[in-house]
Image (cartoon, rainbow, N blue to C red; front, top):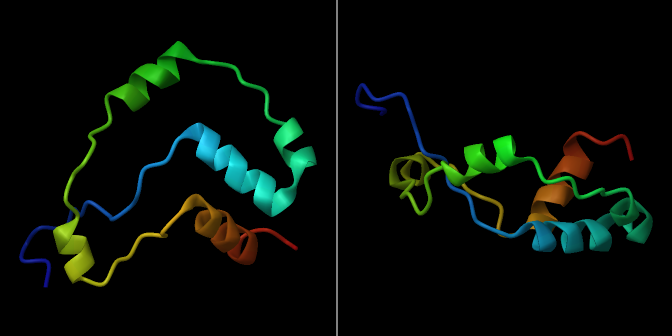
Length: 85
């Protein structure tokens, strides 16, 4: 099934930090958002700037992998699977 290639680019989607914060606000309220302290880190920014963009995860999709459709869904999955709520 993997035809000798074990590395996969998994499907995903892109969103901004602002979109992530708004999803957090919808899921957990303003008190959670108020805990965010913006502290730009040039080293982290350089790493993220070097990440590839717009790659095609066709093999992973063919194997049945799926991405969440938005950041609200990512938060919901986290809360369901990993947060003791």
